[in-house]
Every structure is written in structure tokens, then in C-alpha cells.
Amino acid sequence: MQQNHEIDLSVELGTLVLDNPVLAASGTFGYGLEYEPFVDLNRLGGFATKGLSLQPKIGNAVPRMIESAAGMLNAIGLENIGLEKFRQEKMPRLSAFQTKILVNFFGDTVDEYGAMASALSELDRVDALEMNISCPNVEEGGMLFSSDPATVRQVVAKTREATEKFLIVKLSPNVTDICEIALAAEEAGADALSVINTFVGMAIDIDTRKPYLANTTGGLSGPAIKPIALNMVHRVSRAVKIPVIGIGGIASTEDALEFLLAGASAIQIGTANFIDPTITMKVIDGLMEYCRTHGLSSIRDLRMAD
Image (tube, rainbow, N blue to C red; front, top):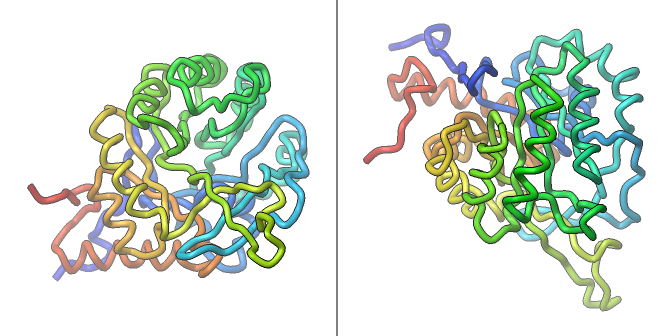
């Protein structure tokens, strides 16, 4: 019987090597430091910070979050402290940790994406950049960057020119053909893809006869989206040659294993962090146990049966 120390959970996402495939997803893990009382950050494969912009954002009006069947809707509005405050207040503390730090970021224009990538590249301790392209392009009348292959090529190429950091593009599922978008991001220089971001949804209060969220719509996440996310990861991982990071309703070791079997090289846990702040640790332990009981010396040996 194999012992735990003989099992290798490390994964390679191109040049980015993770001690294990379990990452915490952006928007659900703060800037990492908020979870320090609950988890050993150094046991994580890594985590993605709350999305950052050049200037601070206060986000949308409240209410901006509501529980839904098997999930939640949120319309936080990308609230964040901004690049400079992150650099001054968060990075000195984050630099003490060994875990991989992925900084999630976004912009209102193509040039802002490039500027963010360039500025973040100056931070040695940042291991990877994760582009959130599910944002409106103010120069194009509010059309989402993620919705059109040509726009995706343009914004990813601009960002690629601005940084030598490992570049991950986080894809929106709210598109006609996610594989077409994935290929556009790959062609423009993405090193890996995060699949997927939230689905657009809404909920209505039948007593007030108004939407629950002040923003009317929000992003649906949690177990409700897992089967759709799993299918998208399966499709995208076969369409591109770069690594895919699976996201969408992962709340257990079994969920994580499904995404890895579907073709993901690593996974991100999001909404489940709100339900159980220690879930990432439990999934890491669960992957170790799965490998031990199934005679796998490495998580990289995990394959879907023919």
C-alpha cells in the first residue's frame, strides 16, 4: 500500500508548476489573507486574488448577492481596492507565502488591460496573471470583451505584449461557441485558460414584484452550474493545446476529480469557500486519498476511461 509521501499531486501548467491542482477562485477568496485563519495557504496549489483594476471600484448598489437553488447570484460589480493599494498593502504580506499567487485583473479598455499587465509584471512575487474578459468594453459601446473572437484576440494580444508573466484568460460561458473564443485566446498568446466564469441569471421577489438584485441580473455560480461547466471544460480542453483550469460548482473531491477527468489540468474552488472555508484543504486531502486507494503515484496519471 502506498504512503501519502509517495504520491505526487504536482501539476504543470506549461511553465507554471503547482504543488497540487487545487486553486481558490477569484472573487471568493478575497486577497488570500482573509482565509489565513481557516486554511494553510501554503498547502494550496495557489489562489486567484479578487479582481483588480487600475483605480479602486466601489461596486454595485445593494442588495447584490442572493442565494439561489443549488447556488448563488452575485452582482458585486468588481469592487476592489485598486492596483496601487494592492501593491502597497497586500503584496508585502502575500510575499511571505510560498503558494502560487495568481492576480486576477480587468479593464474598461484594451489599453487598460495592457497597463494592468505591465504594472503587475513589476511584482516579482506574482506567479501568474488571470485576465477577466467578462467585462464591457467602454470604447465599443459596452460590448463584452469575451463575446467576440476578434475582440478576444485584440485584448489578449495587447496584454501578451505587456507581460512575460504566465498569462491565464478566464472565459465567459455566456457566448455562442466557447471553443471559438478559447482558440482565439490561445492564438493571441494565452498560456492557459480558466473555464468558466459565471452565468448571467436573475431572481424576482414576488412580494415586491422587483428583482432581488439592485443590478437586476447577477452571476450564477455554485453546484447548479457544474454539469454545464464540466461539459465546457471537456470541449475546450479538446479544442486547444494549452492547459485548462476547470471552474464551476466544485464543492467536493468528487467534483474536482470529474473536472480533472474531463481534461482540466487544475481546478478552482469558488462558491464552496463561502459554505465551508476549509473546503480547499479537504479537497487536497481527498485527492491524496483517491490516488492512494486507486494505486496512482501521481495525480497526472488520472485519465478518463475509453
